[in-house]
Image (cartoon, rainbow, N blue to C red):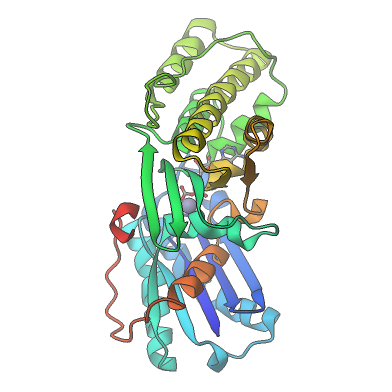
Length: 336
Ligand code: KG4
Ligand code: ZN
């Protein structure tokens, strides 16, 4: 069975073909970073228009790469939410109109479920059950995952997401969108131990997070010192260190609380190499194991949507009514 996956929830058009049995056949991605960077962030209307331009050529490209003809596709999975309404509508309408023409089913996928299951695409893959740390631009959650669709929320951010903390602090340091990778790069030339930034809720006794105080602290530092390049790098270092410290300690606590040993990291912030280093070191020292998606599948991509679609379709029927309703706001707990 071959599933075509379409991701268009934000600023990346991702297309992939997943074969049950043979695995990922091909995938392609167009990122809109260059287009949005002029504006310092994602402009929703421009994002939608660009998805319109990219979706069909990218579908042609993955079919050609995989050597698969259109009529061999058995189902189409698309990101139904959460995300930008207009951007989601592009993927949903391409998916449903193509599926209608081919007389095959569609399935709407929760974007975070795509991220959550993406480490299963890697080798070695974790086995259920595991704890997942979901760290994207809009979400920071710890989930217990017992199987496809069996998700229990253990804790989440009460304000900013970890990705947002990276992005907003980066902006304060004069870095362009997307701030996460830019801040990580600047932090690489920063020195340790010069600034101590707050780690809110570190000792809250639960698995919730709070990151909004961090940007206020960064703002205060930036205003106080009118930083030169080295100081900016030192502040970036301290910012990244504070975010990572909280993510590592809460992840460790989630493993202790659930009695599980496997931790899966998913979402854009999971691409952060320093986070990977500290998490692996901390968790493995305690006998646990950490699994990451391949770097290219950490940030938004079509492979995770094709894959989640294939897993879902193994357990449930797709839809042939082709009436798509996207869900810009959609809680993962609703599909568990
Ligand atoms: O999962 P994702 O691609 O999109 C959403 O679903 O939100 O995550 C994007 C987030 C952004 O906040 C971005 O700055 C952050 O992931 N990010 C990083 C890195 N790469 C992406 N944050 C820190 N270090 C990175 N290397
Ligand atoms: Zn994402």
